Length: 115
Length: 114
Image (cartoon, rainbow over all chains, first blue to last red; front, side, top):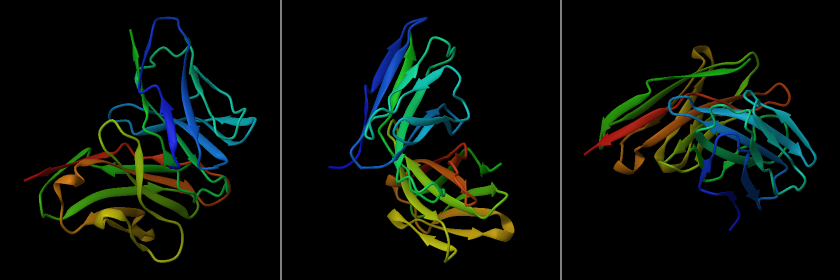
């Protein structure tokens, strides 16, 4: 089955700790995205990558970092600089195209909670 | 800059009634428009999208939406609600003028009562 996997489903972060959320896709998509979802706020773009070894900041990149060393993987690190990390994090992928009409396919999400 | 406004954070309907979820957008160039559905604690699934061509777009699960340029709207409808339609619905827009990312509305929770 082709799709996007995210792990873990739940993640707990202690004060001052960096944590990494995993996102893997086997859809052979060039583009990948990370969103943050808060209740009543919709989805907000954190980072996106159109191609391996390249990525761009989204609307709320502060306190987050990413890497794109492989086409199928786009991990997100929530650093200690992110003061309010509690949220539902969604990863997505799409054919690159780059003209905005591509459908984004979403993973099941990771819920991050602060201890 | 593009933006999306979804009117009503919650919409309640009875089973069998018409579903109407409202979406208005702002875009400086012709837009691409999307509706996604999210069930609790899950990712988003595409319902339908408008890129070019016919302005009435049919999607999965009996939903459809009409792109109205003059009203800058892309409202989602379904003639008869089913209990399984209860979920959160997101409208999203991207620009057609070059590389563009999706901008999402804040979502509308659809509640269906028996």
